[in-house]
Image (cartoon, rainbow, N blue to C red; front, side):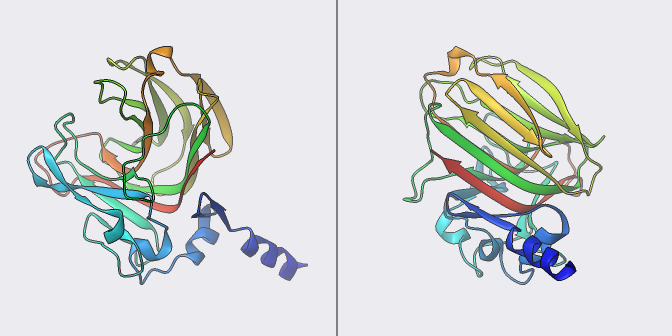
Length: 261
């Protein structure tokens, strides 16, 4: 009976959504990852581009999908495989190069299409970002997942941001309009270092469906966003800044998928 249970658990540990392997939560996910290879050896990074907290002022360095892919793909001190458990790890210090529209550094993936163009999808249809992760360390607050506005207007705001705070609270921020203003909702609590999961989805063009550790909440999308296309982001987008290069947010991912239909 024990053997049958173990085999069942192992065969259901990974699911495939949109061609990306999603590891199951907790320890079983870590068994599947090879800690000796780059993140691209454990994750299909063909639909992601990496932005790092280095480069020139206002122009952070980006790493293309082609460089991220495979067991010998790109990794450095800001984006690497944790040799203890195989987690795809993102490090964003409080001092780092930022984009022109942000004061905060990030080590974060930006969704791309498989042909190398930037993802830019309509709110109509169904779209989902799923992740299994743990926040290894954080100074105050870190964004670990986003739906961001693409083309369709002048706004550079996110539609949705999912935050993890040093208190252990998981908080979703939904944008009130493309011109700004964010409403926050506490949707869970997990101690620092503990594994958890989320899914950020859009359904029917009008609703954000957020699931954290199996509990789902829904948020209406204001009509002012209808003209905008969207794309997903995931990683460590630190929400505090200082002159320190040792303080910051480190986040390890054990599963990451996107799907569109």
